[in-house]
Image (tube, rainbow, N blue to C red; front, side, top):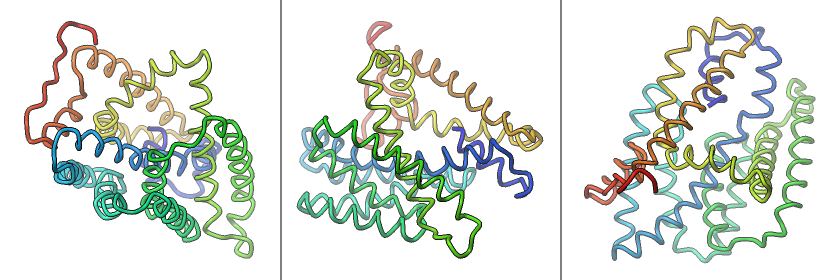
Length: 296
């Protein structure tokens, strides 16, 4: 939410208008979250196919309908939020993940690493998505042992800080600059954020974290799409704020309201509004949604 708000604001600003908040978002948040979402999309691909195979003899047809609905939502969303992720996710899902399902698992890992490495070298961006899809898919098929989590966090955190520092130093140096530094820093930080959260979920913070994050996650599609009109409504205010703190405040308030709304909604329904519509169109039937009683 912070990154999306900042991106809409940045379009109306000059380079000379950048301040410390812009620097922090650009180097600590920008390009640090869509790798996580891409990785999780590949992981969820396996979960969905397993579930669909238990219900129908044609799980591929169901999955293609699911991706087609996502593509339609993304195409509409692109009109208001150019650069959004749903349409590319649907396209790459059909072109990359579906064929990869028939590959041997080691081949999926090798192809995922190769595509991700190539995308980083090319400067990152949307071309990172296919490789991360494959890595998420491979990890779901062959989960690593839990003891790797702490060293993975430490290594990725150190690498993320180092690469971010290097990017800040070389970004304006035409001799030292290379386009791969920024996406590499983003991938390392994304890994640190993801593994760091998993480590926190092993502590006493697990319950309060899940109380906030689980409702948002279960209604991720609804919350993501609803965020766009909120941001667009406040763009004039965001552009006028030279401190850029208005964007952070708007993001915090929006997320708090979305947590409260998601918790209230999920106490009465099994799926969020758009999640329910997506599921119903995927299965071409009206999926029961209302819960019996007021609590799960």
